[in-house]
Image (cartoon, rainbow, N blue to C red):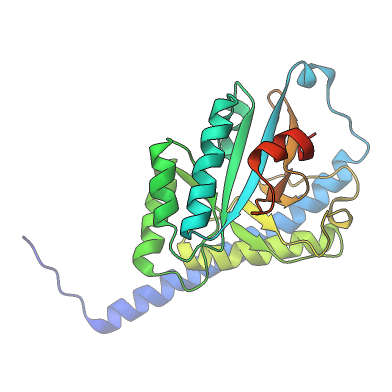
Length: 254
């Protein structure tokens, strides 16, 4: 085994340079993101979806689960068994173009230790969107990065509440910088924390970013997607204990 020794000063310089490069890249990404909103908003305003793009549609449900306690895990297992019985495919935002059947996107929120949920997801061969908590243990963070590289999860970041499209673009840029600083890679999935039950002011007009991003907002969790399309905005619903997955599909998701 060969061991290399590097002077501490060289390590510091290298670390500082890498840090500056990462920071510069993240800032450039955020600026590009905001500019892409401006271009998309200008170029797409008034556009309509080509008729050929809506020859077949799929329905994709997005459901958030909060925590990883015993009750939540039991509820989630029951829900997944029920949804699989309905013939729904578990998927991720970047796989919507490949989806052949109706599907469901699972979102894991406020989970300090996601490992119990991830283990259960592996039993179902089900991927999920995971929002890493602040202060996550470095080993746990590395584990999540490995799972994302394997295609088993998509990492996401929270986006602060905004007053309109431009403020939302800025919030996404800030969240991108923070995510890049924490994990050393860009983020493409964001969960918008709206002030209201249903977000309406942030997505006024026909606009979307030039980059391939996904933003989840609050709604009833039901999304109708034209074949071949990957929408910018998907709405999600937070799974609560006072309603069942059966009642969701029979009463809410209509």
